[in-house]
Length: 430
Image (cartoon, rainbow, N blue to C red; front, side, top):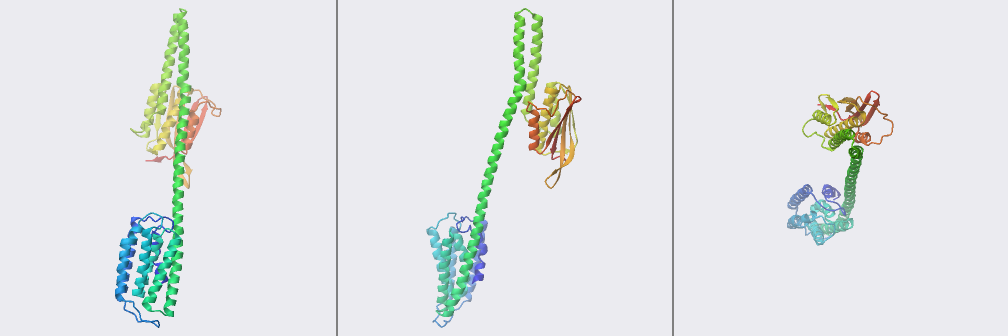
C-alpha cells in the first residue's frame, strides 16, 4: 500500500499545506476534481471485479461487491458535497465542516476495504486530502491514523480475523501512514517556505515603494532649493538693483538734475529688461522639456531659438542624424542644454554659443558595452576656473542629474571660452 500513497503526492502539493493557509486556485481545484474522478473510476473497476472472498482461518468473509460499490458511491458524494467545499476555503481552524469531512473519509476508507481489499487504493487520494483539509500537522496526523485504523478494520472484515490478515493490515497501513506523514511534513515545509518568501517579497516591495517615495521627496526638496537659489541669484538681485536705481533717479529729479535722472531711467529700463530675461529663462528651465511635439533635435532647436530671443545670444545647433535615445535620457539632454545655456548668458558674456549632440564612444555597462551620446555647449566668452569652489547650484545640479542617469559632466574653461560636455549612456542609431 505504500506505493498507492505516493500517487497522492501531486494532490498534496496543490493544497496549501498544514498550517500554511488552504486557499486553492481554480487550476489546482481542477486537478483535485481530476484526481477524484480518476479515483472513482478505479474504485468502480475494482468493485466490479471483486467477489465475495472466502474466509481465512478466522471465519467467513463478509466483503461483497454491493458493499464495494456502495463505498464508491459514498466516496463520490463525500467529495462533491463535503470535501470539495472545504478544500476551497481559506480559514485556518478546525471547524464542524472539517470534522464532518474527516469522519466521512474514515467511513469511506473502512467501507471500501471491507467491500473489497483492493479498494485500499482509495487512501492514495484520501490521505493527501486530509493533509489539505486540516490546517495543522497534528490534526492531519490524527486524521490519517484514524483512516489507517479504519482501513485495517476493513481488511479484517473483508479477509477475516487471522494473524496473516493482521500482519498484512499492520504492515501495509503502517508503511502508508509513515509515508503520508513524511510527505505531509515535506509539503508543509515547502508551503511554509513559500509563505515566508511571499512575506519577504511583500516587505521588499513595501521598502522599495517607501524608498521611491523618499527619493521623490528628496528630489522635490532639492528642486525647491535650486529654484530658491536661482531666484535669489537672478530676479531678486535684479529687483534690488532696480530699487537702488529708482532711489537715485528720485534724488536726481528732486535736485533738478534732469540729465542724471534721464540716464538713471535708462539704466532702470535696461536692468528691468535683464530681470525679465532672467525670469523667462528661469521659467523655461522649469517648464516642460518640449519633447511632446517632436524629436530630440527639434526640441533642442526650439530651445536654442527661444533662448536667443530672450537673451540676444546667437545659438547654433548641430545634431547627428539618426541618433536615438530613451525618453528619460532625452529629458536629461534637454535639461543639460538649458542649464549650460543659462550659464552662458549669466557668466560668460559671450554673444554666441554652439550646441552639439553626437554619438560618443561605447561605455562598459554590466557584462557588455552600450552606446553613448555626448552633448556639448560651447561659448567664446570669459572663462573661469572649473576647479574653484562654486556658489551657484547650476553645474553641481547638472552633474548630479547626469550621475543619476549613469552619465558624467566635463567642464573645460579658459581664455578662449567654456565648453560644458555631458556624457550619457544609451545612444543608438535608429
